Length: 381
Ligand code: SF4
Image (cartoon, rainbow, N blue to C red; front, side, top):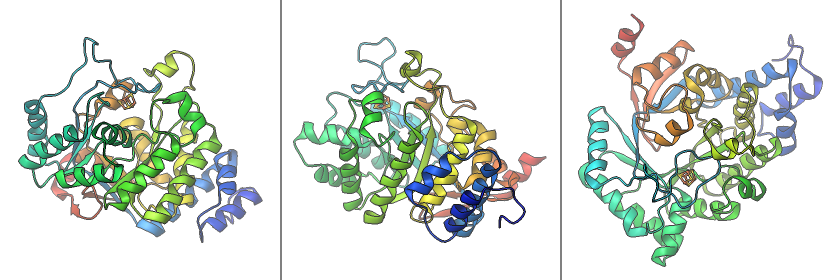
């Protein structure tokens, strides 16, 4: 594969090995640092493996975010969305407002409600059950991907129940899948700098494993480019793959590049400017080489990268383009370069332009739906 490429012998050796097995932490650390003529062979190897493992289909979901509140007790250093309860623009959506957003999304064909928001001081398990029952009662066919490990942990403490019981109650009330958010970087050193009030690394691991144990699948995320080292990115991915070996509960891995512009931690001069483009692409490629088919779906966040760069990341080992995501106010507050509401036609065009096949999916990657070809023909006229 590398016969005619000017790749260094060490990189070639690791990339050749990567075609047969998941790479080690040591090799991943080496590849995170490659530059020059070793860069493209890394991307090409990840893209080759992506094709071997999941083929040329690129999936995405027609979904909408319902951010039920922006009031948050946690106040992470990277977040431009959270507010204190007495801030002038703080809000908690009423039931009517939640249903109105849901109705709008369903009319546009949404298959998933992504139920996210801040962490309220008094949100116990009944609060989250109510949100689920409200949506499931009115839209039983739409899957709910909702809440974060930090919310569940706080709710379980408030309601004096175990994490396991909390998940079982939420599942009974209509929770279909759990976002693997609040992971950020799974090292306590970085967490102390960017989100000291969130669950610790070990608590996050335990909560997510419990969700998987009660039969809820989840996504897995990384939010990188702020204060962490390259080695911590690798350590994070290694933690995720070790969880997956135990539970097989992750459906996808979602790298989320840090959007620095409006984040408190950047404005206070305590973080980096975010990752560079080559760092983003190396993260995608190294993830594919570390995760192989343990977590076969690697998602590109077009909301955070913009359409153009998201398309390039799809050629560096990724195979999913996330969601149409109407109403993602967290990313909007951070300065999403191309907005937060894509059409199926736009996502399909990006994918088809790469010579790949756009396919709609559900939240669980268990059902797939062909895109109506006439929509794409209309777009290309
Ligand atoms: S990222 Fe989530 S938990 Fe952190 S401050 Fe923002 S809304 Fe709150």
